Amino acid sequence: MTNLFTSTAAASQAQPATAPATGVGRAVLQLTGIEKVYQTRTIETVALNHVNLTINQGEFVSVMGPSGCGKSTLLSIMGLLDEPTSGTLELDGRPVQSYSDKELARLRNHKIGFVFQSYHLINDLSVLDNVELPLLYRSGVSGRQRRQRAYAALEKVGLGARTSHFPSQLSGGQRQRVAIARALAGEPEIILADEPTGNLDSVMGEEIMDLLLTLNREQGTTIVMVTHDEQQALKTQRLIRFFDGSQVS
Ligand SMILES: Nc1ncnc2c1ncn2[C@@H]1O[C@H](COP(=O)(O)OP(=O)(O)OP(=O)(O)O)[C@@H](O)[C@H]1O
Ligand SMILES: [Mg+2]
Image 1 (cartoon, helix red, strand yellow):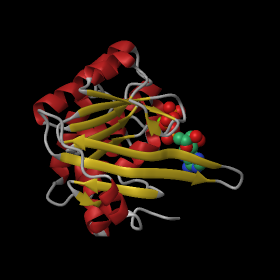
Image 2 (cartoon, protein in one colour; image 1 turned 180 degrees about the vertical axis):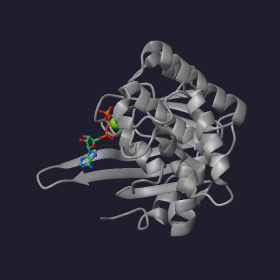
Image 3 (cartoon, protein in one colour; image 1 turned 90 degrees about the vertical axis):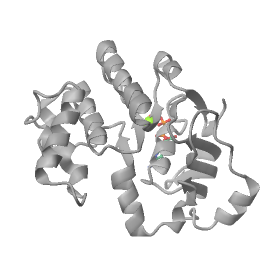
């Protein structure tokens, strides 16, 4: 696979950095000419087609588009969970390939909180243990602090009374809220949320949306959220629309 290591210089020259929008900070994530091609035995899918996109510090950006247009792929690449086939991703102004593996692991664990579309909870662990999990790999966070932060995050998403349940004992919406709590517990600078309210009723969906808006406003957390809900998207600072692997507005 061609990867982001091969095309950095050419891509950076071709596409200079976009200036940050007024009222927000420097670029935290900069995608230049990002392409993602999935190759299976029978079919090649261009999930992302030369995407150029800048996310600035403190922004709350929503991403909309039809099923299969590449939204989850975009988030995975931004969250360092997957590599593009070509193009450059810069994090805090530095190309991702210039970070060591150790630095990347730290960034994934400290800087970025990911809410997966399919939750990715561990079924053998209680709700509390699931939420504590990302904090286990942090030096300087005691067991007691870990527990406190996990409880606090679960309280925020309305699951303070479900901490000792297991994921299989929860509804879809409750699992989704555990996934959100897990991202919050790490107090990340960037939250990448893939349809965080997709399985919630409208009241709970609003509450989670308010929580994200508050985090963004009061703590300056940068948020990129995929949503199918136009009303929610309109509450964010910028709405990006995708179609067939490309940004269309
Ligand atoms: N691991 C994979 N292998 C092969 N093709 C994949 C893989 N992951 C995604 N795709 C394909 O890439 C395209 C984009 O998928 P992606 O999951 O990013 O879409 P999406 O916009 O998040 O859709 P949805 O709204 O349904 O979640 C789709 O056509 C999908 O089938
Ligand atoms: Mg998706």
